[in-house]
Length: 421
Ligand code: PMP
Image 1 (cartoon, helix red, strand yellow):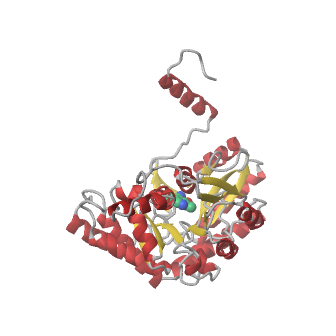
Image 2 (cartoon, protein in one colour):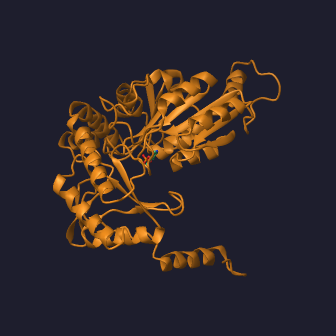
Image 3 (cartoon, rainbow, N blue to C red):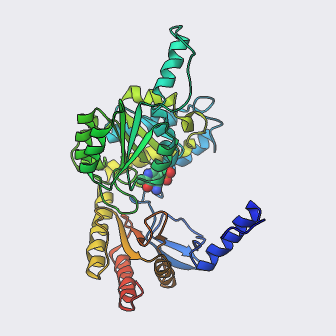
């Protein structure tokens, strides 16, 4: 409760004390080894890790490391500025072309993180009127007062309720009317779209939902977008590299042609084992984003060594499909067995297998119990997920062996028997 006379600093300090007293303050262990391996070194002993997003084991792949090391040697650590100033380096452009080719779009624009891609790109789209006015001014065609920054009254954003925080933040920054639609409910979305009087409509949804592991109804989203003349963007951070016959992501999973989705966003942090984000689409859309996305214009790009390493990682992912097959096989096995123990996996379909615990404090206890048994598996809780829907978010990778998964299942079974899981 706010105490009279407390300064903001005092209030923040006392709140931290309160959160710590609940036992809910995150207790992430300090790891003394690579966190991209299934076995990590914590507190002087081995632990199994079941939450790394190094899904295809490419973070530590020898050819990926070699490509990054070579680029580090050639370009150094940083890039010395933004792409529009000093740092428009050949490896950045090569990575953009490579990821666009991988997902089947004409071109792509890269950012230092997936988060930066979403918070930059979504509001940028709604600046088309402003940029048009600026272009007309430059061409001497301007009439009236010139360009005005502000809310564009013509746009309405339709954002899926379980979208990732970076999409939510991008939408918050957009100068538009915002309407949320219920999880995977294309019936409601159809009605909302039909009721909108805006001339520019924008639908945005995760491809694979990060906390639930289920897949968006992309064919229906694409059909609705076409019918309503709306723009469609899919955040495929968890789908790219993993889903579809060639690992091209959740569009390929459903055989939806890439021409049906205007913008495909993704990250290099998960399947490709690196860091960075991108948005892919038609060439002119990408060209537009280079002059409108503030996180591209006013922030430095990926370090060149990472860009080179990620480009190599995409090559390896395409060459070695066994990696995604094994990660998905591991997930299917774990999901089947953990459900047999009585856990709810929330309709998850791919490599993310949330295991519902419910109560926040109970979930924190499960994380602690697992830690005592040598397993690192943090829980996700409110506000990352709804209150009372706390869960352990297990992620299966191609590097996990069957015995390791069986050991995890044994520990979860013991917790269930004790009524603690
Ligand atoms: N979108 C989704 C759906 C995500 O799950 C994440 C990361 N967890 C991001 C975007 C942000 O990606 P990055 O970690 O590259 O910033």
